[in-house]
Structures are given as structure tokens and as C-alpha cells.
Image (cartoon, rainbow, N blue to C red):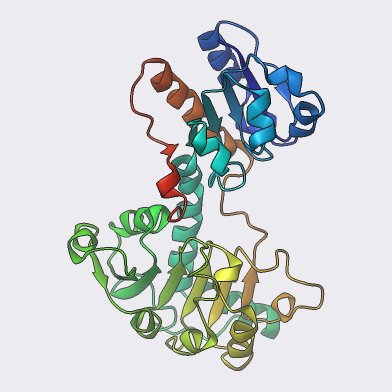
Length: 331
């Protein structure tokens, strides 16, 4: 079996460390060269006998040109999340199987989200900025910092990541409410979640966490009006996509609601434009899209592709296989 690794050079050793590469190579009984996308596109003849491609960030676009040069290509193992950057109508017509590592990449996102939910329920970021501004500890009060017990967490979209966040919240004494018009009451109950309207999520929750996939119909879904409904001292977390939020409207609300906190791992554009108030508003916490896999965490995605390849060779169902019908609903 002939194969190639094709992706960006910088993350390659993180995603496919040597031990995982060796195990993959043992299964194909031969050497799997590593090439960047540009190197392949500059010499498409390299693809003529390739049956499987192991990829990740910076992987090749599976368009007509690429597929014509790779007539034997049967499967692409994509060690990253959404395949929207590589899949094309041509790849579906050719019935090339595409497998992603969305489940593996969801793990650090949900861990990051859980940490921010629990920290926010203690009013952690409000204390941080108060101490920085006042250069003194606030007066002690038994009521300060609500904590998790009896608090309400709002989840927007019970997507792959949204559902996992709900599962991670199970050991804590919180009530979880959620907005997702595509989820049944029965499915929500199985997660221990109460479904409600989008407005209710913002009105009732002490922390609201956004996990909606970016689609045409979700672009700009979160408005300034929604954010203005937040309870006193509530927090809003976005680890999904910045374009789901109407950023100008959010900034307006944050400017006059200095009691609320926005924890933004994603923005639109990303990073924010120079001079954006997001850099200076004291009640905004910006992180540079770190919720997903970073450093050694990336190897979890490569490991998942190794396991998928083992299933592929045994003709077993592939857990992360993406079908054309899935493309409009992926998290």
C-alpha cells in the first residue's frame, strides 16, 4: 500500500510524533514520505500510486486537479477538526473516504471550556481585574464569588463539543440549560439538560458558553440584545467561531455593562483589528485560539488517525468518517 504524509511542516512532528509514524509505516509495510502541500502540487506525479494520505493542518485540497493526479486514492486521514478546508464536490464524486479527528480535537476544547466555566462561577476574572486596577485585595465577603453550587450554566448548541461539556459538568452541582432547535427534549434529558429559548439562556445562566458551528444561518446569531440580557456579574465564553457573534454590538454592551465578562478564545477577524476595543476593555479576556489542540495535545489527533487506519485495514466502521451529508452540520 502506497501512502504519503501531506500537511504543514511546523505542526507535523506534534501531530504525528515518531512513535505514531512508525506504527503507521509498519501497517503499510513501507516508507511514507512527508511532503508539504506545495511540494506535492509542484510535482503531482508523486500522487500516481498513492492509496492513502495522512494529513492535518495545511492538508491538500481534494479538488479535480489533485484527484486526477491520484487515481488510486481511496482514503484521507485528516488529523484535525472540520474537513471543510480540504473536501470538495469532486472528492465526494470520487467516493474518497475522509476521516477526521474532530473527537480528539474536541477534548482540549471541552477541558478549556470547563476550566473557564468553573473559574467564572467564582467570579475569578472580576477579581483579577479588580486587583490589577485597585492594587489591593477586595474586602472579604462570604457571598462574593457565587461558585458552582446551585449555579446555572447555559450551553448554546448541543454540538459534539457542547454535548461533551454537558457531560463534563455532570459531577458538579450546577443546573445546565441549553438552546439547540435541532435537539429533541428526550435527547436533552439524556444529557441532564433543560432546553429553552436563546433569550432564556442569556437571562437565566450565570455563565453562557457558545458551541455553535459556523454556518450561513448562524453567522451573527448572537446579538448585542442577547448579551444585554445577561444577569449581573455573568460571563460569556466563546470557543466556537467569532463570526457567530455580532462583535460591534457585543463591544457596545461590554462598554456599559462592566459587571459582565466576555472570555473570547475566538474573534472575527482573528486576531482583532489593531485598535479594537477588545484589546482594552477591562471586562474582556482574550486568548489566541488556544482551546483546541496545542503542543503535545496534538498527538491525540495523530493517535486517533492511527486507530482509524487500523480499523480501515480490517474493514471495520470508521468512527470519524465524514460524509457529504454531514458537511452542513459539523461542529
